[in-house]
Image (cartoon, rainbow, N blue to C red):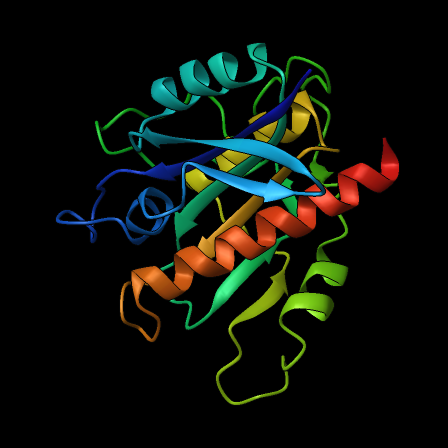
Length: 206
């Protein structure tokens, strides 16, 4: 394992977000490295097209490098805060991607879990991240909450594929559209804090 490598992905344009994808705008603003527990962790930022084939290719490339942590980010046009996704589903991939491709089946045959797996959950303690970093979830406009609805588009697809590779070191972060209500910089800073807390959790389980 590359103990010092953190890979963070964001998506490119797609229908309804043709000009800019809020996830990539936040990801690209992340620092190139961060200090945690006396170590320098390199942050590699990866832009992924909203296409099934591109996701398959990039997920394979990412996990072959055996990073310490993988954070996938995507935009949720209906969200008004950041959502930390607890699980991915494997029975509802019916929509065409940005290139027009449709999968042969709404369920995916996974490399490790096979075709009979309906859900995979991250083993990262999502609730504790929210409780520690963003405790004011009862506010009118919380910054971040837990979610169990990663969706049935490419966000759900990439999360399912990555969780199948390693559910101990993978998390999906849904972000709201830019300035609705948070700037890209505010969202990026929240993602940075989430990365640090994930690294803290992984250190305790190593």
